Length: 291
Length: 280
Image (cartoon, rainbow over all chains, first blue to last red; front, side):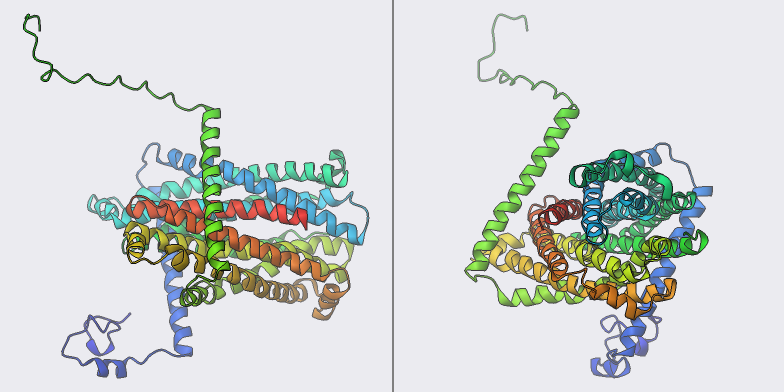
């Protein structure tokens, strides 16, 4: 965005001085086309990335230096963790059943021997799926919740009131959510793995007559897998409140704006989970080589 | 009040109704029952809405221009997210399959593994989740804003059927969007998987392609995924419209409704995913 004091390059025709004719402005600022659109998008993306980075750094700063408000983090832990427990249990339960069912059916097409199904399933679950799918769900639920809450505060000018009281909304609102989310996403990641293992075990027993003892084969799970899984949980837990808190804080307009902010929070925090998954899995592929 | 002259009846304080006994805080069973009733109410509402929409769709009483506008808004505008998600998903699938493939030396089966995972599960599921976040949430927000600002009532006053004008086009557009986006995501995810298979495991794309078309995968795998996409589309559309029309209480109400719809659709998607996988 250019400086608003120079009318010829102003990108807001309606804010420009009325003495400048509309047509002349359009000549000076042509409609972006082709490369222009791409460039505008790239700049937008870079600016958004910069803002996210700034929110992240300020959150980290306040984690160390900020005021401590008693009970705020605990309350957020309840909101983020306990309130998501039922949803996450349902989703991970079904995920466990789906994965074992599909993997069993497909493996039967190639080799009629399913004794390694459990071992491979546990490895995959612990290294990636428990953390990633669980956090994708958490991104949906928690991200939407954070953005809707902070967005409503912005719309009703409560954030401005906070700033008037010399309380930085990042310190006051985002920091507790950040701390709570990191802790609870790790706890919920472990819980997700447990639920998915339990339902997978049941499915394997009912559908493929696989004995639980054969299924619970942890021989393929290495310490590297566990470290990767927990790293993912922490990374997702950190990313979700930052991304959705940022989109909540940048809400504008009335109830429609809150809707937009929520949408953006869900999409962006899901994308953040997927991108982080790829980055961490890629790093893990080289740091903990297998086989 | 000890005086003998009692005040006339009209001046006496009206007899207070007995205060209702303080509600006992619901126990675990009570809370479970309450949330169960809530879920049943939502699902029932969605069923009724589905009936009303189906009646309009089959008698072709839906607004064509709105369908086109919604297709653009939901479909065309979602392409960037679908592209990014699908490409990254393909890479992640290969990364996760890599140890298994290396251990067994089954490089020729990489195409098959990535193929069945993508076509049957991952592509429909992740596409639905991403579109749920973008389109479903947006849909609820838009309808909720209309409800809060009484635009739905205005439509009724103008004798315009809100279901035929607002809801049915959205449902149709969302189902079509999800169907097409899943085909798109299938292709792109396999493309990403083939590229990363070559980069990480040294599996040439030719071998990947042979594994994909080597006879272990049939047309059933593709149609199964597409059936899922349609089912997810119907559920997401109905849930988002149902929650959007039920918004109460201004901007915070819209935020709460969006939150609820995203969660409900995601849970519905996973439950139906299992049911469809099980029956197909």
